[in-house]
Image (spheres, rainbow, N blue to C red):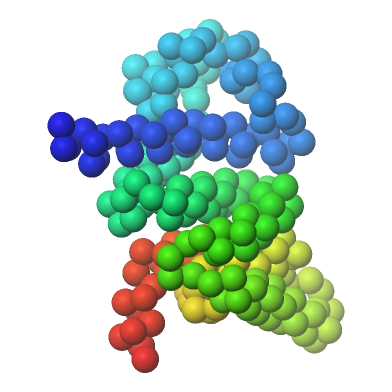
Length: 253
């Protein structure tokens, strides 16, 4: 029973959320409603039956194919559900059944959606980041270890700092180097994680992003104008801080 409560239920709950996140990832860039119609196959557009829409398990039982047309289903659907389940479990083990668990699960879910949309379309929807900033500021009034002032400073420092960097780069290079979506994303991260969290997320995101970008440019023989989505790396940096940030900052200081 303790195994079910401590591990299985949080994981299953996360996969259910992950199923909804797949809907958001597919529909938001296409400006479709995430509520209606119900889930459908992107190939044949036929509705997916409820018993064929069980998170994680349906993909395995159907061998990764649509039950109607037989076309392959993107493996990403399984990956998103699995990641959401593991994040839910990890957050539950860290915070228990608490307000912190629910708030940071919402935050993590938003970062998952942003990551895959940015990878596919190189956009970060305002419909996620702007409400996310408000939610992060509001949550700081109730979360232990966070204050509203810290949340405000994190929001302003993150967004304002990247805005100045983006403006400076545009003036020097005469082209855009960072989109407004990245600036709003880091503001959202600052609202949830405060000043220390946003600084570490920017540092780690820049480190990972530049490393991957340089590797891709060398491998694909691209020039410096090759654009690498920055959102996923900021999301990774934010999640590292969420789980291990205090340890990292303490060892650094």
